[in-house]
Length: 59
Image (cartoon, rainbow, N blue to C red):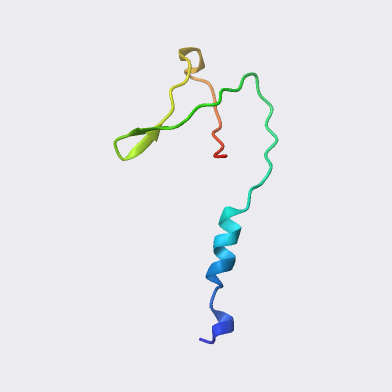
């Protein structure tokens, strides 16, 4: 395999850091910080939101 056939790792890092724009329509928005929870993260939302569909976007 030649060097030209191998993926450019610097290109892959740049693509992963590229920000994109999302346009989302909804009823409410809450901005929160994710807290540690074992081997994962957790965000608490209002109990009124139970059973509703939510989307999470990392900024």
